[in-house]
Image (tube, rainbow, N blue to C red):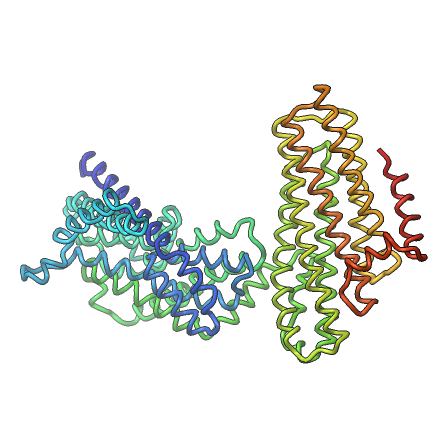
Length: 586
């Protein structure tokens, strides 16, 4: 094999991989949103989930893309781990469609209907249609169709180029000797896993195997079996990479994908080795071609699915056990069992525990953000974002549960409690959002090396301490249902409003004296606006605690009464307001 042959083969491989990637991305872009909607909503049963995984993967021709999509759904809470497993199994069979398409290049015969299905006939036609759609049509959907056709034509041309380059190997004895080593099942599995892990696509590695086998005739069907088994393990690399930084259930989804393929390979390889040790199967000694490889690829994936489909729940338990919670860490949302909705009082008590935990996460995120003022830390910033993600998931899970609970037969007291929790989780989620917003402002200051004046630093530090206190007051009054603490929140919120206005005035004065810049003004405005909004949400949380004792939701009226009335409540409000004005004077 000459250097020219090697370079031609590499060029063919590059075109093949590029074409497959281009076609996959275009297909996902054209149908991606619809597929995501389908995957997210139609997984109510294992069979439906399996069929969806199969169909979606046939459309986008990538089990890795489907699995990564599923990992993302589980990470965002759209899909549960149990719903994801059948989809992954279906994807493993759906990915075999690519090998069947590529097997068309092995068609032989001179009849017109066979000639029409040969790539040499239809690929140039598809390429011309694709480039016309992409270059001359304006609508995005037609351009996407053009990219799909161009990608498909490129991968088919790349495969033909690879096949032509490696044809000379059929007369090289050393090459034939090398391939016979892959008839050792263990070596075959390792080779298939490594190659697929590197290029991160079982469809692509099967295509390469088809090109090699079809061109040289030196690969036996027996040698392709363990290689294809290994390819299924190698394709798990993409899902494992996509789960890095995701939540535990997303990691568990990637683990299920890995376990499914490893267990399927071990079981199938064991059966295959035992059978071939005692029974001589002549067909395994025959030369493999594109068609026979497509048959082996499909048969292996179907057999694995038939074996493991009944054990989907066991795979889920294995993944949960493997990717467990850290020591001392508990996922509180598992407490929200829908069977408890039949006993609303217990269900509401569980919800309260979960929301208490959600409140702690939000307050922790804000506390870490406040600690970064003057000493920004990327590590702390990442932790704040992680906490915000956790709070978002809590809101989705608890909100969905509470809506279902509100549809049951509730007493007036239970109904008020559910309403209070629904209001509160929204405010808690916004607290974590503002924590991230404030952290971003601090990150911008750190990146651009911006510094406030000494006067501005003192003012903002004072406002931060006031907001820190109000977040703790709101958290404690909610967790303990403490009215005394709840009554302290609104006076402090009014003081924080005052601090925001005063800091803005001070900035304008410094700007006029050229002691500050407009750029710093933008950062300062973002910072104090987010701090003030944190206090607003704390006021809402305390208000919900107060409203429950009044048996009605009229917070606006209540606050109007205590601020402008003439009874003991107004006196108490003014006393606490003055106390906080003195404490946080600037």
